[in-house]
Length: 192
Ligand SMILES: [Fe+2]
Ligand SMILES: [Fe+2]
Image 1 (cartoon, rainbow, N blue to C red):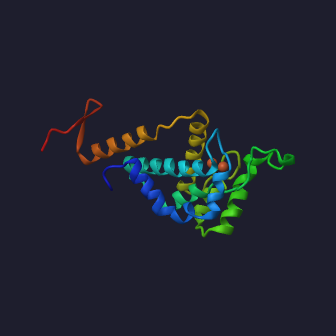
Image 2 (cartoon, rainbow, N blue to C red; image 1 turned 180 degrees about the vertical axis):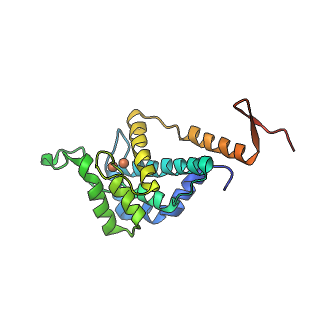
Image 3 (cartoon, rainbow, N blue to C red; image 1 turned 90 degrees about the horizontal axis):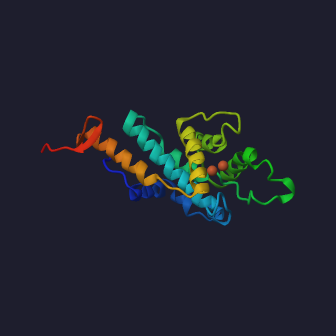
């Protein structure tokens, strides 16, 4: 397990796992559309990838659960690849956006990118429980949670990723013995 996590390491991992998506002209089209507040769909997808990865690191650190980070990140980057402005009324065509956009995102992604089963599931199930079929994989469930979390953060303009990263690093330092807990408090180890 790598010891320290940082915003830089997370950005590097997202880029290395999804650079073909991030740099593609097709995915770049998501920059034209707004998702929540002033956040574009592209920024939202990167944010969901980032929080999904942080949540995955928490699961790994606290419970030793290993996730397929590649599928997690790539699915998150494409989960809202629906490529239209859902705020436009468009004669009522987008009225059911909440229910229908996972299907549209999936069709677009299947046309433009190679995907595995997990990535497909991430995209199709990310609106659960609004869409009734639950996620099949832990990766899909994590993106589903990260998506809702990011929607809240974007709407209310908050970002606590630094705090979550700090918690991951503290748990890792405790697990590795670099710091020890005394009466529930983490303190730096004085042992050599
Ligand atoms: Fe969505
Ligand atoms: Fe989303």
